[in-house]
Image 1 (cartoon, one colour):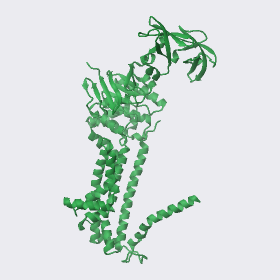
Image 2: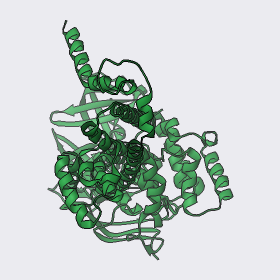
Image 3: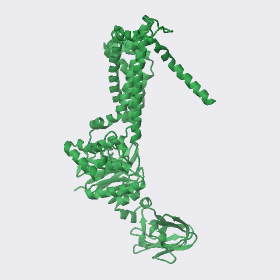
Image 4: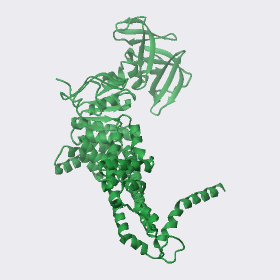
Length: 354
Length: 267
């Protein structure tokens, strides 16, 4: 039994430039998966291959057990939402939403009814006679979404659909799309370069870099235990620590950090004494205090303190070793130049492979 | 000081360009049989002559037939050519485009000689179809320029959206591409018609006595029996051209307005 959507060693090259490199990806029915990566990482090309606008140079794509990579877009039954909405400017809102139903030769009366119902769902029924140009960005995006949903496609594909909206509206739409996904049991493939968006919305995130998947996992796993340096840096903020492994004992490594500091970190398998390794330590995992508050306690000096409203970013150094910590605004009054103890647990550190 | 100079210079150029038109127009209403000033009295006799004399009436009808035919030909072919050159699927699109626009720059005499030899071989010399084809060649570049610009203004993702929503290519074209490009097609057709209307040189080479257009008739009347009907015909042509120009401007204005409206406004 194949998964609902399957990419089987799919590659895509434009001339000599390989954009997607031998990709294997399985997506389950009802899943909300985000393809996350910087521009040029191949995520949009993957979506375009799934929608049928690009053909793979190599490999096969399956939907519901059937091979689809040779099918034209109009035979694939996928709802695509574009970044710039791509509404038909010469049609009214209702005509836009009716378009996919007309293509399926749904009877007139049923079209009218389904369009009404769909517009009701996004609370835009009162705008049905307007032209897209008379709507705000958020309303246009909602209509684009409705148009992609109304013909009950097997999959919804979204290409940075919220990229053109301002922050507040974007966050609102994120929740709305998530809600629709849950309510209607949709399978959604969502392309974004915004890591916060991917973390908020997805069941699973595939992090792309240079045409390959760096890591694919639940949002929590991606954030808490990034596997590679790229993922650790791309998702959220992190302290990348290059350290020499002094000894390994029962999967806990003793690291020498330089400047006379040492710490213990969960090493997993495959680390041995004498080796140099990279670790990721999230800033919010570091606790600052006057006295040690964890099994790792480093004596540092505060060199900078930046106010962020709900939290503070505190820059710590000791000689050439430095860390960034993030802490509650009310947790203390840290003066620049003051000594402080930075504490964290071995499990807060994640070993990264290159 | 400089601004005043600028203004004077601009005004002088406008007067220089418009003078011939203003010089000929009043003569359409002269009562004299000579095409010169001063005008003894105003009368409608030459306008009457233009609309009743057989040669003139036939030439007006000919102009409309040939202009209409050439417009249809040029609009269909030019639109198809623009569509074909749009997707970038063809090799050497740049060269093709230049070739299509060539009739705009090649001297009409050269075209005329070539066209005459060619049409004689096809047995189309001195036929309506022959003149229509010859005019269409001259009109196609105008259609291509106008339609290409309109097509360029269409966001490709709109067509992709239509396709993903279940529309096969022909339906995408009929329901999305063509409706969005139609202002460009119409203004291309207007330019094509206007071009055919005042074409003389090609017509001299390829048209027989039965296909005398208004412009061609004016040309021969000046040489054979000059009288103020020419001025009346000129007035008619100018009015026709102004109407067409006004229509084109109106279309462009509407297009610009709807383009402004479609720009996504984030709220």
